[in-house]
Length: 260
Image 1 (cartoon, rainbow, N blue to C red):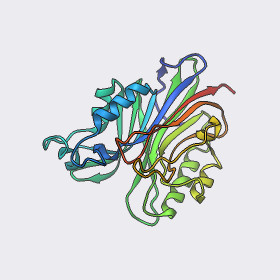
Image 2 (cartoon, rainbow, N blue to C red):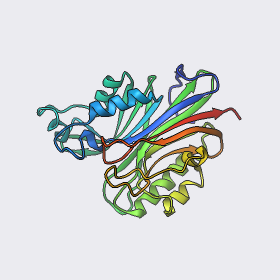
Image 3 (cartoon, rainbow, N blue to C red):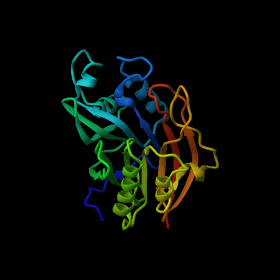
């Protein structure tokens, strides 16, 4: 078991139904309107959907890049989105970047104690991380929620990162839910390796999942919500939200976690 605090998940009802969102937010900038930040649009969308958790990718923390979007003042994307949505925000740095950090974010309706693991990069390139937390539902069940952004540069890195994720969580005895930009398509070896231990939430929904990138020319599905295979899940709804606040489109799932 991982050494994380167990927190009451009061927003969930007795059957442990939760809404989860994953969104690559393009470092807080409008991809089709350079120099303009996208935080208010992203925050308004989150408030409309009312997710219990949001896994965020391409999150800048106090970088010169976000300072250029804020009259020269650096700031935290995770903290800013938390303030705009009324949620709790957390950042997990994968790399040093432009005077600050770049990595993963989590938003949550309740406070979390987060933990980060670094993922391997055997071919070199950008370091990658996975940020996660353990929570307790109002009915007393424990689960782990997390988010990641696998490497875009080399397929060998992505496969090694999937293997690391599978190995790390292989002996966990609680349900696990991971969202993220995995940078692989369903036809890839990395996706097949992920399926050894995880269920693609979209496949449980009865809905044909569409491409998630790019908004202007949607061609590939690389953003996912994965559920640990050894537990009983029901996916009531799965959507790709067609908004252009980033080059990626967010995915949202409403999930029931059944007791074993």
